[in-house]
Length: 385
Ligand SMILES: *Cc1c(COP(=O)(O)O)cnc(C)c1O
Image (cartoon, rainbow, N blue to C red; front, top):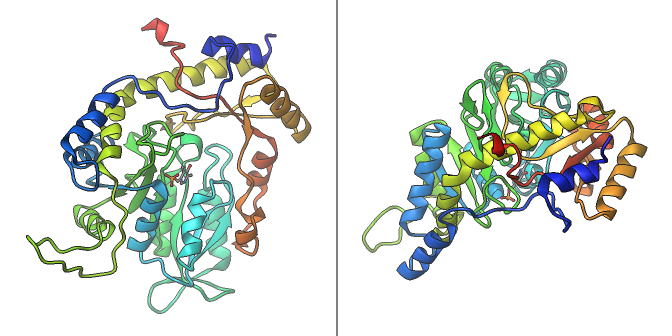
């Protein structure tokens, strides 16, 4: 069998270093960014911000999208809108990028880590259900509280790992039953659909990210998706300093944030959105190419769940054990092909080491065996077109 390194080099047709994920700018990126500079509207006011929000709304079907300065600030806004406050608990997964939990920390809230499903690598409805049956209780105000700590469990925060959608219908039923706000960390899943619905549109709120390594980039930036026009408008208000519109007076009616996305970044986003269908096609073709390569291998390719259509943001394989994972990490990285292990589980980080948690069997297994593979859009597979 061809070695994995040879296979990846043939796929990308280069002898140079191959990164995990690099952005590409095949369309109007230069033109739109130049246009903002020529117009002088490079900052928080400008037509590209509105345009970009509308493009995301029509692509995802979200009733209201609000552009923000990062995925993290979109998450902060979503949690704030959900009423998460100091002392609250939020159920999330331990297998995620640290940004999912950082915002909770800064709000004085804390995560509860519950296990992932093997099929999605995201929050497992069975594990959440079992956890709540053991530790959740509805108090006299109808709020879900934690039996042992007495804290309010305010929200459920699943993350669509590497772009693969979690089981949203099942999680939504649990949220309804336990009175939890459903917030989707959809930072990695622009272009991924759950039973025909775009990720981020099932929950009450969601956050997208346009950081440089995501499927499209604005340099840095994010987007909050709201499931109603009115909550979206309030989110826009608080992310823009809560200023009440007036020709000259400064009046702000609540504590706001300055989480606006600059027009300069939105210009890049508008151009990238024009290429998003191409990127998704390229990434799905690349995933299929990997999947075929690994079909007779002891490495198990991570494919989309049967109920979903994934953007395959990052390709991944699960190794038979930790030793073989470490050998593969070393040989690829030594040969200029970037691969990396998955994030260390959140409860291993100093700031979340005391977090309340359930059993994390699947999370631990994936943590010790998974490797991400180079996933930049390649032209492979498009030759059939
Ligand atoms: C990228 C990412 C974020 C944060 O996005 P930024 O735009 O970098 O703030 C949040 N959650 C997950 C899972 C991510 O991958």
